[in-house]
Length: 447
Image (tube, rainbow, N blue to C red; front, side):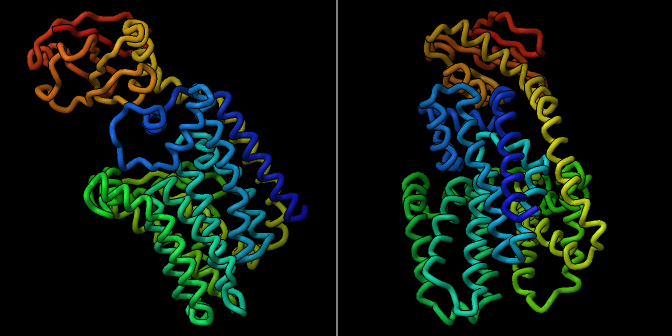
């Protein structure tokens, strides 16, 4: 198959599965609900949540606010990841490698099963890869970078606004490119300075917002960096290196990660693009692994870069008979993910059933009245009920029940609330509401 046909097949597979996740999608998750609430207005400040995803959510709210409407724009934008993978592969290795990498990514379940979620990871990853493709493609030219290098600035800025956690990998990618191709930088420094200046201008609204909200230009970034939990420094790195790679990264991705690392032992004469991909990939894993706990979505960029290196290694060293299996394996991966979608969405729906049932009970009882909901997980309840929230950590911090026309306390599995102890701390009377048999309990509380 030609490179163009491989890319078209990968994009078709990705978008088809993304639409399937939109149609079969479960109730909104915790982060999805937070962005939806921010888009609707009336929620907490949540300055650490990216404004880019909030803007995406605003489109879904304007369309009607149903789950599929909120996720549709994410599904469309997420398809750009396939094309960004191809662009980076073409810029650093070869169009063929880029096309095959797009096929592998389209069948990687940690990526594709999140293809329509109302979070910024997939679109932000696509923008980071696009920016890296521009940098590497322009700096590797014999004549030095052209003015089209300025296109890297909006790509990186979009990645930042879609996910503030993109900042470290953007900085790492720009630094690695400048060091590896320093002669090209010196050959046309004005182009490089102009690209950096444009990036700074595009980020100016964020820093002004941060100054207004936190009193510091980097306040929002500091808050964002402290949000992911960790049990100890390096917890995430241990998880990235010791988890089941087939479950954590994908059936075809896992062996390619090993191939990518192994291929660095024997580099060709044109070694800079490969070292560039390796430095950014390994650097992201180490930086995020030390800072926070591990999730596959945190290292999507690193995963894809190592896939590119792995495919490059196979192209250079693997026998032709093994390479002939690539297309059948890619097709099996696409089919496997498509088959997994109904089971995965059903699993999420079951896991979210208690909080969804509690929200239905509250919405029916409140009947449009202003309300307060008290629970240990509140974003989904806020979105589905329209109530104001109180995240329950300290019983004595709960506001008096008389301040609200109607108030509710919610107990769900793994986030239990002892209603008796709560009413001792904040006196009131509790009336249980009927809730679907999902393990959730809801009480309407009055003074």
